[in-house]
Length: 228
Image (cartoon, rainbow, N blue to C red; front, side, top):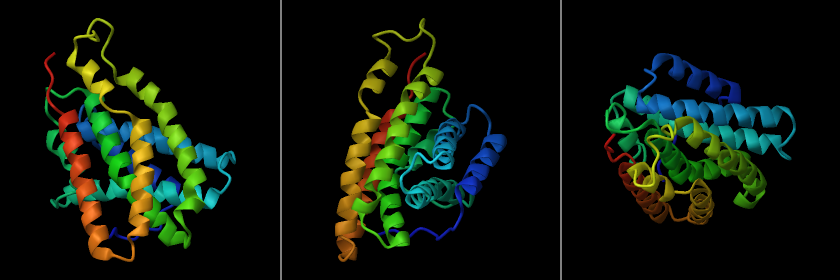
């Protein structure tokens, strides 16, 4: 299984890094579009931790930070002219394409982060805390509920105006082809499989690579340039 550089950053530090990216990137840049969405999600998780909405704050914080580190590691890889994971490559490759709409960038980033990174973050969290996936499931579900609740707002904020959003618009069909809630459920299954395979490193590495490739393929389809 691919190894991630071991950080010990708290939530406020990853939030600061995302805010720095927001300030540095052009507004229309596809990575900037996703970064704004993910920053809002991470800030919401931070508020929930502060207000005691998580039964186990230690698990919630560890999962949130390990999750964010996966995205930030992909950003760092590109900035150093290294290849990011396959799931992230379409977003970085098409980030400046004029035919890709902001909502597509947001969905492609969410697809990469939920479909691939979240499963690995669960495994990272279990290793960090010395626990089993079942011990983090409640916090996984609460974070997932936050993501799902924000999905509607994301779509509303990034959706074209009513004059452009018609039943025949290709974006309508794209929106109907992917569900964050279904992706989250599949991610939990993938995380449990990765954990069960941890004693078989070759099989685990192959499973992770296939997941990465499949999520990247879906992301590439999401970023198909659409007519105005």
